[in-house]
Image (cartoon, rainbow over all chains, first blue to last red; front, side):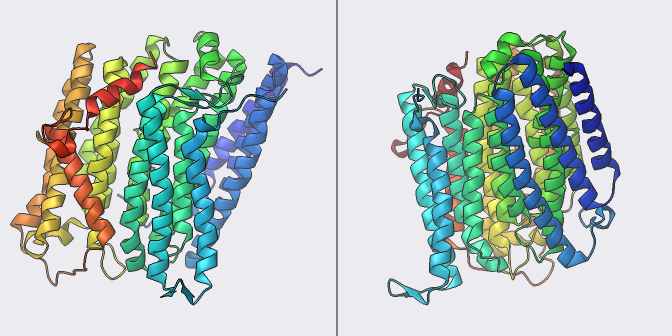
Length: 100
Length: 503
């Protein structure tokens, strides 16, 4: 059996990769993928903790997260497409009309 | 064994959700027809019709929530595994959210037609977001809190980009989406860590298992707080607010600036009281720093804004700071002051955005401060109302904004939070400067050129009148008004009763 620490370490690593990607990358599609990676890191942690505690809450939580992530990415891609129709770009640097 | 289910606990949420589905169906059924019940189906008529359907369900939810509040006993959705509890805090917040959504709904009818974005999905999305907020404020389990936040946020991402031919609206939606989903991921990781550290996802279980010396638990609490500071737009996670508020259609800005704030603050209140009620003093320090930074940044950056929507966005950041003072004090008195503040804030802010909505003309917002020059001569009524709302937001005596600030400061001083209260008073002096720039422009400057005007839609008129009356009543008689018509308004008692059940 895989020790819980390994699963948590992997989840922390995945989350950090996703975090770095979401903050550092400029391509909108890549940012969306990075956010997905963060959510999946959460799923991994939840499943591992659920196994540690022997309860079902973690599994239920994971199902909720998967459904919500699907809805979120659908809306996100829709927003990116509507921006692309007006601007022909998927680079966040080009999206800077609103600045203080 | 089938569990015992009380549907009443999610009554308002269900009503509003069903309303959203019906609005979608009605839009499809009606928009394909030439005429309905002898009336020709036009875009404007369809818009009003859908607004009427939405209002019906929102009013039903409002009545149900109010009845629950009056009766006062908490209803739990599934007592063997409590995840949703409709207690007085939840029903008060739900009533407030329903009221805010109802007013935003009426505000939208004329505005959407003016901007030529009169699509039926608007009302469905508005109702869906509202049902998410209602779930959020009655959630007593991390899973439901997450679900509520997402059902609230996802429709609002779409609403922010609703004017999809305009680049500004696209950009607003994109920024809100990126920041919002990033924040949800952080919040979620915090929830996972809290679950790992305590073995529970319900707030009561977390309270028993929470131990701050466990690094997992401390990190989880920190990440959950970060997620919430994004939603309440407190410094240092506030940068999205001005961009999103400025770019989104004004009726959407009005809606999200008030209802999201109520929902997020009510959920944060429940989370902090029920799960972290006897949390370490470090939590108080963090909240103090957040509140101080939010007050300073919100109020000082608002001073240099030229766009009214942007100025109001920074003002909403500043108001989050005043609300956080109540969380630092963390007594029942302070929390009821927070609820009173939210109550007053809903009407002040909806009114202020309502005036901008009413001034929109030929598909454009007139939202620069220069556009307001000389408005007092061309639109005296709107200028007077805008002045009232600005004065209320600044917290000048006689308005709801003053009573709200006074209650929060009083609760903070009683609890010995002196430094933060002094900072709050000083920054509200700064806020008077930027709030009064608009009345100065309206009453003391000459109009800059051709003043555009449009007849005020009836919905906008009603919303502005309601907001103005409530702001004044809350300011002059927060409890037991001597005027017959308003004598049932006992806002102080309501807010006190709402939090009484939590302690």
